[in-house]
Length: 200
Image 1 (cartoon, rainbow, N blue to C red):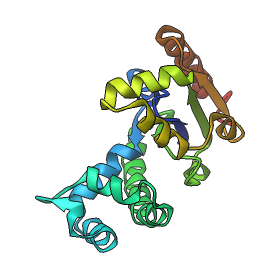
Image 2: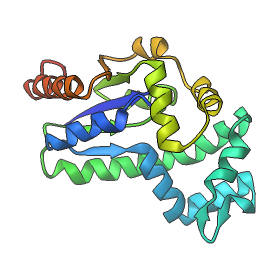
Image 3: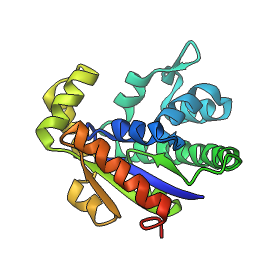
Image 4: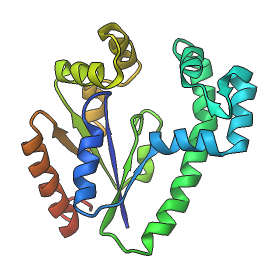
């Protein structure tokens, strides 16, 4: 079973693209969502995060995301250490998920991660699909979604690789400007993957 990695910068519309694939019956693993769930569910992970960032990392057994974000935002060392705790747990969880969905024999599956390329996780993928979108559109989407300021979004964007850098490692680039066109593009990619024209 082929693994198709999907990534893109903040506000590019990765979730929308993944949902279009899901509508076509393709199973999808969302790394960021599972990471949040594992931070809540796994006692081992919880202990390691508290050891790294302190007791305030959790409130009533729930990760305090605002506090965690504050600790790592401008601290590259702590961010790297936190990723070194979370990524192996996510990869272990992904392997279990892959084993489970293999029984249904899908033509391929989706692995979506915001930092798929930055973290080196793309090496487990057969192909990488990069979702891009005009900068202004991305900022508008995130301002609406997260109820946050333009400057805060730009700061977050500065922590991610540029689209140009990501394009060098992507096999497919999907420009998400118009939803109807994006949906048709997803259907086209889906057909090619099923025929194995892209999956190689």
